[in-house]
Image (cartoon, rainbow, N blue to C red; front, side, top):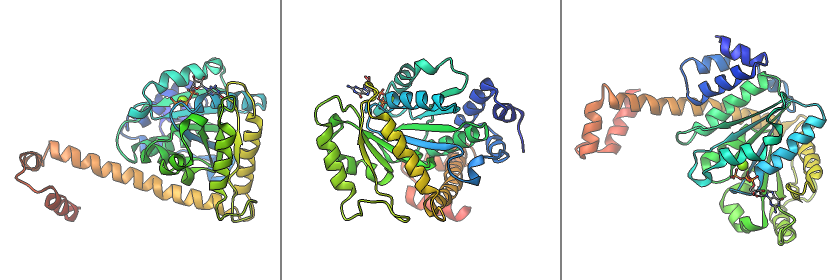
Amino acid sequence: MSDPLFDAAVDGDRRSLARAISRIDDRATGTLEAIGSLSPRRIGGPGKPFVLGITGPPGAGKSTFTDKLITRARTRGEKVAVVAVDPSSPFSGGAILGDRLRMEGHATDPNVFIRSLASRGHLGGLSRASGQVVDLLDAASFDLIIVETVGVGQSELAVMEVADTVLVVLTPESGDVVQTMKAGLLEVADLFVVNKSDRPGANALQRNLELMVHLDMPLQSTDSHWAIPVATCSATENDGIDEVVDSALAHLEWCCGPGRPAWDRRRAVGRVRTFLDVVSEDARSYALDALRDEHAALRLGLEAGDINPYQAAADWGTKG
Ligand SMILES: Nc1nc2c(ncn2[C@@H]2O[C@H](COP(=O)(O)OP(=O)(O)OP(=O)(O)O)[C@@H](O)[C@H]2O)c(=O)[nH]1
Ligand SMILES: [Mg+2]
């Protein structure tokens, strides 16, 4: 069912866009139907729009880098949206302020839309909200949609599943390759960039990352294998950014390659994930409501320790 607020957002009204995103973030009633009635262009194929995910440890320079990307995209005449997900995470307090400051130069450009997503909630909540926001921005004709999230924790990294290409930003200070692997960043990366190359240690980290990503893997990309590039740059010095942009576009092109299996697979997984995000969260909120309301006795029993939570959950499962 179409919704006037979402229709106005898609037609280019920025206030409506901001309000529609707040409704997504608040999980307002009717949002799913409104999103479901949109016609995202990316169903047709990758690149229209290009959804670029940027993740990495706190303070790696993701927002500074994003700011430089916006400038380049604007030079090409593209309409850009940035979604900075996660400000409520305990790992990156203050991100909203930081993100705003870093991208301040674009604040008055009518073709740049920057939005922080204060998505609360548990596993699945962040990726649910960001997936819906990306679908809305897609329908609203943005050419480049950048999704920034701190690369700490499973729910933050799940956000990256919405992207066509995922860029992992590291720094000489952000730890060694072992920590990168432990954080799960290798699994999500299509490209690595070691930022703050103006500081010591960037080249050593680049070499170690290269060794890691090419372990047992061909150095060159083939139709079925993408060889993850490892670049260095300095976002503040505006150095090396163009090379990273070229690599990101090369990845996008690779996704669109013969039969574009990678992109199709990503989209297929994404569609199932969208469904699961919504139903799992709804099931939880249904249970929360029920514990407050008609199953208050169950909650009291759980709180008092009179009811075994495992048994109650098993019984709950057989209810639906
Ligand atoms: N020396 C140096 N400092 C940089 C570079 N890029 C970013 N910084 C600085 O690093 C700090 C963090 O930059 P941000 O862009 O906010 O980092 P972020 O990854 O977005 O941070 P969170 O969103 O809080 O996780 C700021 O003080 C930047 O000025 C760089 O290339 N070289
Ligand atoms: Mg940031």
